[in-house]
Length: 378
Image 1 (cartoon, rainbow, N blue to C red):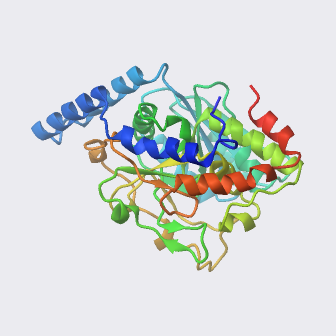
Image 2: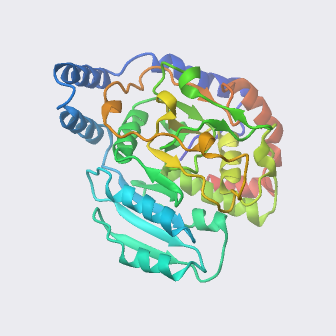
């Protein structure tokens, strides 16, 4: 069970979150040894040692985690057949090291050619399940109901159909998960993004964001923002989100995140996850490579939130380059402090956030006591 935050004094919360940077500075012996071995291999022969390096990563993951994580890839689609084909092709061509299941969720009213394609599509890395809705539900149910963890070792990768993934997206997720589990922030991380954003959408107007420029020496950063352009969600956090969303909608309450545009978002599943992340001091891990090179990219196809001629959503803003080689494996080291960003993309100030939370904790979905009791019940 996650640690309760809503009734902690502001100073305690600030100390708890700020202390991560101090503890990060003390490198973990096993991790340091792994990085030394990897750097040595790469120095000897950069062109032929990626497999050895990956095997070291997998071995380290197995030592770090009590059991190897089980991934389910959830693809959400409706009527964009060409986009769906591009995504599924990239998924089939990715490198996996364990059985990975594929679940395709199709909205009601999808064209017959798309239904035929998903029915005949051959997934070679595990089992394939196709779920077709009978009644049109919209984007929030389509995403939220696409996956639920069967147990605490199940992780869900959520992908809308206008995305494409790097061949190395699975390796990034496994490596990043192992690194997170060895840090003092693992209870604060709810997922791992495949995508690095170039835009902060929670402010008005949108703000350009170049994390490789702002944090040039950090391989990743943490932000209180779920990614809808390719991400893996952790089982405990997803179950908490489903509980929160259930009560949020049933009681028709409100929780306003200070100064965030998400308060006015309509038809967005992320809006509610942002509320939870802000209230619980939770973060998603994002990769941080040059030019926002990522493990997924977004082609900004027309859909629920993108319309023809949309000047707020252009490919120059959202379509980022993909990793096409495994050189990113060389120097990934999460044992030093990672930048912490808040919902607005600013450096996270724990004491300020705790004070904001103390003002709003009594305004959680009414009746507050009933909702909070349900959220944290075992």
